[in-house]
Amino acid sequence: MNEYHLHQVFRWIEVRGLIRGPRLALALMLTLCLMAIGSCSRRPDPLQKAFDAVGGREAILELRGFGYESTGDRFEPEQGPNPEADPIRVGSFDLSLLCDVENDRLSLDWRRQVLDPLRGALAYKDVLDGDLGYQTGNDSVFNPPDASLERALPSERIAAVRREFRLLNPLLYLRAAAAGSATTLKADEELQARTHHVIEVADPVYPVELLVDAESGLVAKLRTLQNDHLWGDVVTEVSYGEWSSPEGSNLQFPHRVELAVAGQVLHTASRSSVVVNPEFAADAFSLAEEPRTQVDPGAAERAGLTAQYHTRWHALGVPVDQDATLVTATAVGGDPEVLHLTGAFHHSLAIKLDDAIVVVEPPLNEARSKAVLAKLEELWPGLPVSHLILTHHHYDHMGGIRTYAARGATIVTSALNSAYVGEALTSTHSLVPDELAGAESPEWEIAPVPPDEEFSLEADGRTIKTRHVPSIHNEDMLVVYLPESRLLFVSDLYMPAVFPVGQPMPGPFGDWSQGLREGLATLEWEVDWIAGGHGGVDSIADFHSHFDS
Ligand SMILES: [Zn+2]
Ligand SMILES: [Zn+2]
Image 1 (cartoon, rainbow, N blue to C red):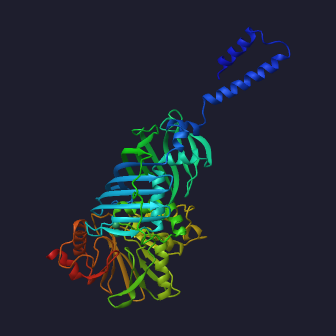
Image 2 (tube, protein in one colour; image 1 turned 135 degrees about the vertical axis):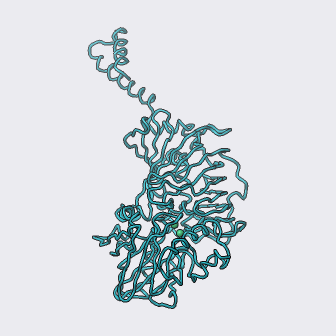
Image 3 (cartoon, helix red, strand yellow; image 1 turned 180 degrees about the vertical axis):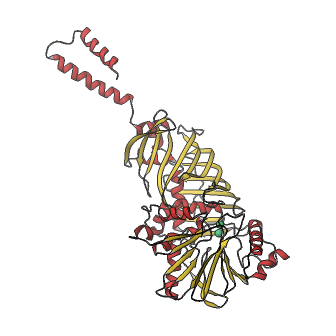
């Protein structure tokens, strides 16, 4: 109520002759009370405003289920040609989604076109019921295109898919708030020159902040934190737009969503055919009895906090959900001091010196690094890793680098990504503290390899060389060469023993290998064997056979 209004009230009291001696105080108090009540009803609190904007608290509470068709694109910031490059578009998707809000069930029927760096058409359905999940179809570009498989989903995937689904659907948070979930009102913020109320709402994984447009009352944005194996606590923001009511409902739904992590857009989607409180088919969420998810609450909690890592893999067409802790050590070329450490989709190479070990490649995440380091401790006890050589900056090959830094390794990496690697080693990891986050004074350092120079490590009768090779896969690619073993280690440029000998390699694999072939022709390295960051070990003759056919 403004001053002018107040003045009028007093005038009215005066004119009616109400102000008489001691009654003045009483009348004033009464007036002020009425004004206070009046102003409350005219200026709803931000949460009420958010409820009203989408159809009111009652309608939100009556939301028992919904469904929609979603069409969009997925992007990947850490698979580009260099660390500064714009995210690549890894694929497009169509999704038919059903959510049984009341009974905590979800059905996600995906059709994905995986475009870059891998290629494939995938069709699969994930059905989640509480902490159980089941998949039919094919979600991997490494399976035959027409594969139709069935499997129980691991707890990690269920937790990650659920978390991303919630972030993309702000009505779920409004519903939780309407049902009495604790909320905290924070200071208003300006967003694109408009005032927004900020309401924190609980989430099973980590609280989210809803940014509610002060004028329209619509949730413009959601903000929360997630974990990333390299970058630690990463701010995650979801923007919502094109709100409208689906047919037969008064509830407002966002028809446009965009999810960004650490300022990089990962997911954009448009929604259509939104239905509210539909009659679900009897088998819409049915799971096979067997096999059943082996529920792992600890794994689910970690994956929920790190959901973006998992859903990025799904978009790449490589369903890496569970920690890859199986490590198989194979002596390369019969040399027991050069080990190919496989057992997952991503591999490392370890070379034993007299007093130390050199490891090439720290893929995936800390769980993988710890498993590899435990295997090395078992085989070569008491030897520290003095050097860790990184082939390139793509997150799947670099994700476990922090564990080696925590244990004092010198990180040998391209000068083209050394600043980026340094940032990863100094990032804040409070959501999921890793070994480096807990290290008192870690003694890692970075040894950058300039683009035109060879880095050479000579000790105990062994030489380990690394240098760049030009590649369309990325600009900062190092390959590693052991002259005494005549062995080359490469990641991504060639996947030894994966494709049939004597036949051309499909799609991007052939293109990447062609680049390696040209690169090798310019080097004075005598290579007999190639070990892969993916795949196995091949002879150089097998490598060339893919081109000579
Ligand atoms: Zn790569
Ligand atoms: Zn790779």
